[in-house]
Amino acid sequence: MKRLIFLFSLFLATSAWAAKTLDIYFIDVEGGQATLLVSPSGESMLVDTGWAGFNYRDADRIATAAKKSGVTKINWLVITHFHADHVGGIKQLAERLPILNVVDHGKTVETAANNIAFFKTYEEVAAKSKRHTVKPGDKIPVKGLNVEVLSAHGATSGRKGKANALCGGVKQRENDLTDNGQSVGTLISFGKFRFLDLGDLTWNKELALACPDNRIGKVDLYLTTHHGADSPAALIHAIGPRVAIMNNGEKKGGAAVGWKTVKASPGLKDLWQLHFAAANGKDANVEEQLIANPQGKDEGNYLMVQAGSDGKFSVTNSRNGLKRSY
Image 1 (cartoon, rainbow, N blue to C red):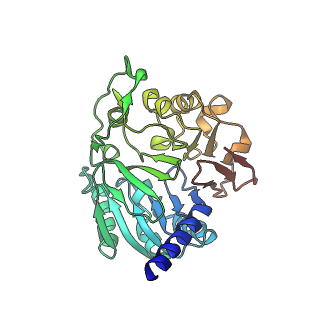
Image 2 (cartoon, one colour; image 1 turned 60 degrees about the vertical axis):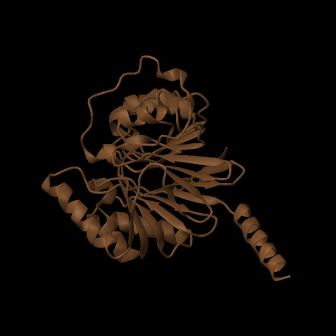
Image 3 (cartoon, rainbow, N blue to C red; image 1 turned 135 degrees about the vertical axis):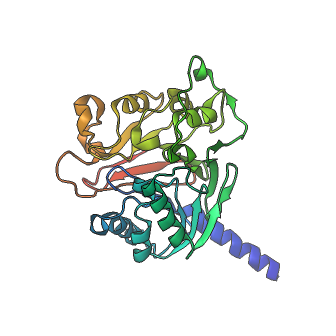
């Protein structure tokens, strides 16, 4: 009898999760990254913390998004790599919200004084939480989600994939020796819904995931790599996102060549941007209604995704309330 009651309770809990959505907030940190995921179970995962300084601007924007979603703590903080626009805000964030677990790729590979300083600050905050250093194939145990690490510390996943016909003639480039190439990249699944975030992963590392076999498969939502910098079409077109989101700033990220590659992806329904990319003009920016922060005064508007386990999802622009379903 007790076993039947337990199984029934488990069924109710599972059903409750299935009825809820995965909520994703793409927070405006001016060309850095801060992506807050709230699982149907109520657990939170934040990818990166934006910049330091600016009178707690980025930490406050993250805390505001957390409050809107009912989050009072960060269960899992994933730091993709140790650059100022990704890890800079961690100390200020820790003053705003408790951080229970931190995830990283290991030690920074850069030796410049400022990079060492960012890493030292990270270690000081991480020492007050539970630290996890991951490798490809590891899982980040967020309740209600399947979070698989595809890249970390220069290594990429060896998971099986299908031959990628788009790889012909695609060449590697000179190796990027910065911490960008060490990025923790994740594939996040909720039922049939799949979301890809590769941080600032570099060209050759992206090719390793896409060629000669596509090791990622198809995704529903893609956060453009390195804020919309140039990424191989062999990866972007192979994963075939229905929607892409570009976490660029007005004057950072959103390169025209990268924008055009994403926009030309077969099957893409919409590309949304956190900012108007000033250098691109009208030729490489989407229509204004799909931009959270148009050119001019920045108001810190965000983009929000709500996804169901059936693979259906919506994107809402906080600036104008525009919502599109997919």
